[in-house]
Image (cartoon, rainbow, N blue to C red; front, side):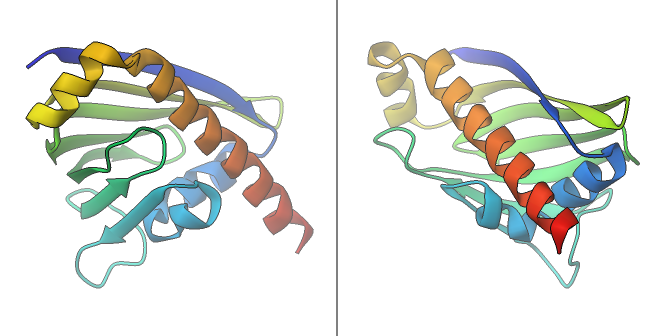
Length: 152
């Protein structure tokens, strides 16, 4: 199965600690990130080191992608690393960098498809373009969500 490696970043006009808090609350991602349905296993409301999260992503391609993310390293206001298993197998990392009251948010993924249908579609579709579309949708949604939270 082919290896996919993608990275995207965006500037969010909100303080790093607020961005980090929103990323930790993965059960609420569907509020601000269309197509994402996440469920933290157990009783935790937010992720922490060792948390396991069931994730489904749909609406960006003909295929719904399902995987499990296990949080392997979490550094407050700096980064969140996870191992993925399921339809995609690999490593991901969110990074946050404070810049004059704003946050440069990055996401990097290095993974392989573990599902034949995804591999076949990747031959005909442009995975880089799909990944970019998914991430830009997430960054924009996060920006709007956090702006709304600041006003309330």
